[in-house]
Image (tube, rainbow over the protein chains, first blue to last red):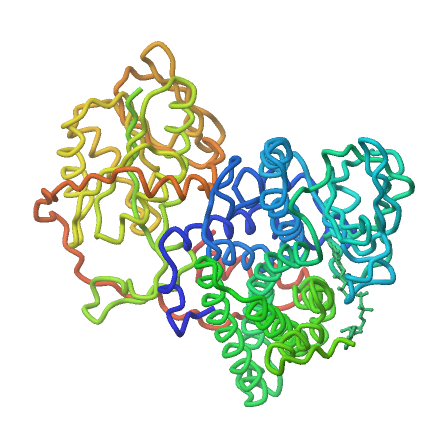
Length: 383
Length: 248
Ligand SMILES: Cc1cc2nc3c(=O)[nH]c(=O)nc-3n(C[C@H](O)[C@H](O)[C@H](O)COP(=O)(O)OP(=O)(O)OC[C@H]3O[C@@H](n4cnc5c(N)ncnc54)[C@H](O)[C@@H]3O)c2cc1C
């Protein structure tokens, strides 16, 4: 996409190198397979090791074998992954923001030393279980419980819509311990724990989404994440992931835009390229503008994250704005492609379907509206 | 082993080239420059040798200040240090080879790797000229390499066969597709590259022997021609390909 605003010049050379090396990996390793993986509804789990080798996993952490890149570099990386498919960005958002981040920030030294190097190389995959069948937008109401028995905790309950669940070696699970929300680590194959995949998704098909069942599931005492106390801790993880979503969806939008622009120049109707009609140009001009604005919002957000001054509402603003922008972009681009836009020879329909998930997860669009509303008025409108 | 890789900063192969108003050079504004794709094989070959035998990999480039970006890419891939010969004007292959040779002579390298050709100018001359000036043996366009006991054995592929050649070291070797699978610059490598040294070396460029007189765009492609349909059209198609297009 033509960089009209010279947005590239806002980034350091390293940040652009991170983007370019991720793009190379995506072009060579992911793009050729994505259509088939989407048809099969399969996450190519062999890619985890490649992501690890490149340094994508835990990229912002500066220890345990991780690279310690800036939030803007991490954002550009998310953009490149999602240029291919939201599923790949989802995989890394979960592994990085929802698993490695809480272990790094809330975990014991032993938990960090055991899990972080494995998660960084992709040898281990993680998932994050907060949402429940009856508690989505209102996770604070969760009914999964933990009770202490001797040197063990016993978990009971169900988590739903959990990214990477079935393929995860380790789950970060939130449950009520003495009525207070607390984070735990649950290793796969723990008796009483199972993670079947949710079938029938028409969105995010290259990402694994699962239920997590806990039936008198006993975990050792040392699997409690010491500092992961209260809903606030869980929300801190979500803020990490939301930053990468706000960035990532720009990639999906760019992919749709580039495809539709190219198509509009070569598709002839009424003896001229459809890109020569004013209505099509209006759509393209608007998308180009929307993407440019989203990039600027994200660059600023990344800088605030690096400075440690990003307020949660600022992250909500970017998630809300950019996902809606990308979803709208995908729909308009699908329209520009005409009938071609409904088949998976083109990317638009896959991105469009994926972005429906992204619009809902990590706080629905409307929940982020309410977060901004509360920030403005001081009045929470959730209930 | 002390290994050197010569690399070039070239426009991305997907760039739509635009000629400057002087009709002699291309516009560099809004052009994305990358490490010459054939040089990636050279960098990978040097890194693999270093990993197997120990030693050090140095990357060298001659080019404008912006070419340091390409050096940093090689450092991010795993090279240990780099030399930048700052040169803002255009040099032909001869001037480039002489200039590189001068900087290279100051060190003893066991092996000097190049890409088979630079994707911008496509002359494929620098590696051969460099070897000649340095008085070293040269093997070009290799796609397999073994180094042992002070000797290098390389494979060169040509239509219908393979040539296996051997040389003593030091030598200049230019690398072709298939030699290896170049690694991506890892995020850790990128962060570490910041701390690796890039030595500035003055340009000793001579006046080029070759002058670019003019650059022009290829002729606009005109629309195709429908010769006929089915088997009936074959003989006419063959005649046109032979007599008009002169391709068969
Ligand atoms: C593909 C996918 C992957 C996911 N991965 C994970 C994961 O890894 N870990 C995890 O814990 N969760 C995950 N989720 C769950 C996701 O975070 C929830 O789906 C999301 O929080 C919304 O919850 P819900 O689906 O129960 O919808 P609900 O909360 O039931 O919302 C339904 C609708 O009601 C609206 N609504 C709800 N409350 C209000 C209100 N107060 N005011 C106005 N409107 C309201 C919502 O905006 C929405 O439009 C994933 C979801 C998907 C689809």
